[in-house]
Length: 541
Image 1 (cartoon, rainbow, N blue to C red):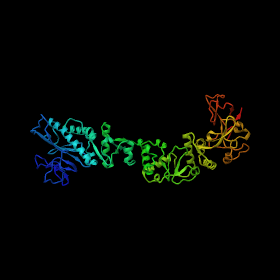
Image 2 (cartoon, rainbow, N blue to C red; image 1 turned 45 degrees about the horizontal axis):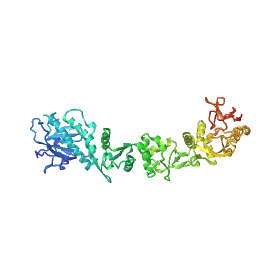
Image 3 (tube, helix red, strand yellow; image 1 turned 30 degrees about the horizontal axis):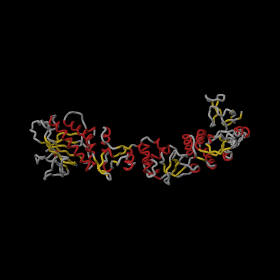
């Protein structure tokens, strides 16, 4: 007997029914049996049954090569327990290796060398019979031990082209797996009973560990998720299901990363679970959609979004300008955990300017500027003290960015102001500084030359309250009055002049007003005086 066919102590083995003393190949760690075992067997075996051993009528009208065919022929199959192929075809002794993890014994016609099967009509006729028996054995294996059953299912890379019996068997097994096993497979799911594949759901590989089984099933709108206890640790189950899905046969519903976005902001989920899920969303390239969900959590458990009426800032230890403005909150400890997921989320939040690593006022002002530039207006009302703190913070902004950030911050906040109605009545309003004019106390012109003095009670324009002049006064410069060198909040002292192709007023329109550029304010004319980059005062024509 060759070394390949010797039986070790811990092997599965099988004996020929017709020749009780003829041992066939050892089947280490396999379920099923090639034949019923003999009482004197050296190793353990599992009793054969109709799912692994069958005696069938011999193929009609087909003779064996060099042997007489009896009225019946016996087939046997064995499946792996926890490992895949290659498998082997036996004709009493091992004859030929095959790609799928199937060990089968039948009355095949081997070549004289016994290294392969002969290409005879008899061998071709036995192939579908073996495939049918294999299908029954695999379905039983899924009922009894689904974790190890996945390794018995063939994949395309296990199948060769060709018309020889071994290649035909590989092709037939793959076809049966796709058409029959996928359609007939029933799994015993705790609490749900027997379910077919189309009643189950699975999550994409990127989401493993980020969702509960209940969440996956709810997102897919099916009764249950393929239980983790039925998945093999090597992930063969995912390869099998993907192959079945790609070939249009029965497969579980698939939950992708995009489908999970509605879970962000679910108050029933823990912050730790949120961190895990957000990390997967970032990794999958869907981070642009995070700003529309309320998934940020502070130390009290309150959830926040990134697109509220006020900008949101977080820090491990809030302090500085962000605290003075009432914007910075202490982030939940789970976001600061020493894990890959938490680090990924922190890195992304830092790039968005939402998570502060220090108390640099410039970082807070940049976040305000980004917020104002993106929204074009907000409802964040500043107190006088907060306005002074913001002004002082601009001293930390690089000179080259002050003007641009100032305009955008002027869109992100609101101050108190007023405007005049058509009849001259004064109305109190809250207005973004970028959409308002400066009172005469903040204008760089002398009082009687300021635009506020010239406009008087003209209806339409909005003006910041004059009391801001005391708090925001930077310095006096000779006799020109208060001069805002950078106008950090975007307030305009007067309409400046910009060329506009559709203007109705001498080919020009006013910059810094909320007026229509086609000449709504056609009664005004911009001045041309300049000083330290401040537009000249407007005068009434």
